[in-house]
Image 1 (tube, rainbow, N blue to C red):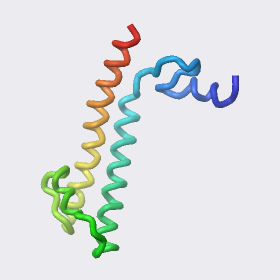
Image 2: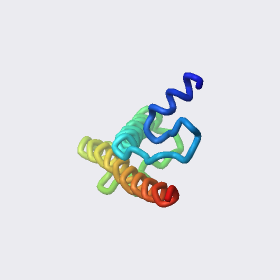
Image 3: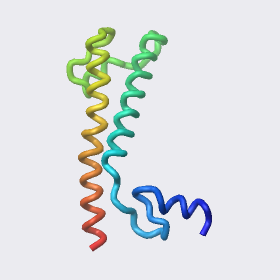
Length: 107
């Protein structure tokens, strides 16, 4: 068994024997998605501030982030919190559905 195969057996969600995938750890997925969305949000706002002539509609963020307005500290913090919450929402819904379907298929 190669080192890569032995490492794969120790990671959650992966089986070393190449069989069906195990369940997704929802906490890990939730934290990963939440941090990803927060970083993406900060990059988007930084892009708006550093490249004001860039042809991207940053106001479209208000579609996914209720209460969001550009260039307000209150709105910036609200957007970060909502981005974090969206990550957990997606993780809880997708992770639960995936784990449910994965268990049903294994029967």
